[in-house]
Image (cartoon, rainbow, N blue to C red; front, side, top):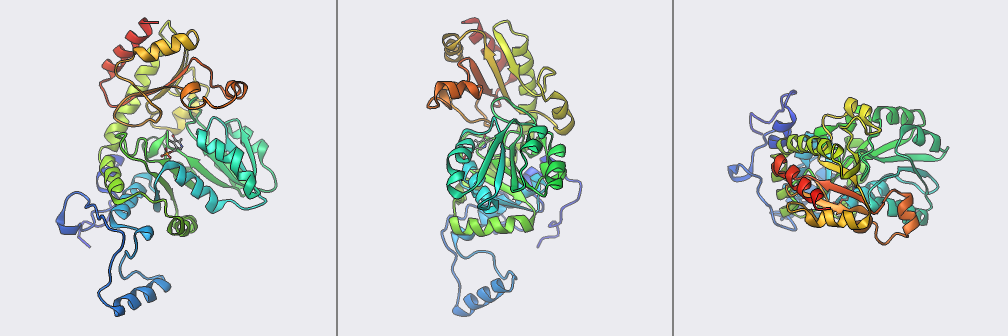
Length: 402
Ligand SMILES: *Cc1c(COP(=O)(O)O)cnc(C)c1O
């Protein structure tokens, strides 16, 4: 241990994103985290193996690593930093956001129990909830993304509330304090997919939420160049999940962990930019004559403006809006954009645009698609790290083309 290994209590997010909790001694005195590209870790003798196994069975640690599915130094360094940034006791990494969501649900769900999901949620999470959970003998409700709707849906056998906040694409912000109160009253566990909020903008664990999940593919990685997911919480709750991680795997490789840990060094800087860009663009669009309606929780017109202001530091860089007109005008607008790449995802350096009904929900029956709000002229933009004035001019010139 170096003399710099303890964490001052008051390190701010930007510092934690660079150093994590502590400045552990690093291999070869390398400043950046080495990529330990190996599948297994050898022992010097059979005596060392025996020592290791004995220690493990007694809950002691004599050395950290034995086999890649059980952990890797690059992954561990990345998990430690993610935990520091979230203010969690522990973080567990997965190969994608979706494997983090599903394995976390599998760790805590039980046959015969009931899970409440909030609507306007990530497409694949919705599909898992509606199509697959019943196969495991689990009851599911998908409710409006509000604390009141959640409370109404509680049944005697409810054991999990799974929410997202902000939701996607309508960016509904849930009152986490109210939800935790309801959950405590009914002895229900709370899991939140806080991908869109990030630990920069909200700290659900401090509000009493049990488990936080992020798709690290988005803001945490931040460069549109990796897939990963992370689950965070206290040691006791994550123990169950750790056993599943060891069993199932679905962990990111060392190179992905390196990229993620590297991306985190600029996390706080990037989030400041994303928060500013989101608000500036949302305001511009709301005042624009070719725009019918804008959803951004930093605007007074958003239904959750008040709770967002109270519970969140910033609102990120997703902006959702209706272009005046229909499918033709919307596509003309999107095709006229010069800076925005047509692709889903968010939170990276490049600005992205999607026509939700086509990109994410094309295979849903028309009526169902309409019922969940995926209308033809609905557009979601994810602002990147480009200059905000350039982004605004690009959006304006494309709107002029309609
Ligand atoms: C992208 C995303 C996921 C899925 O993450 P992957 O890394 O793509 O598997 C889950 N939830 C939310 C809110 C997301 O935005």
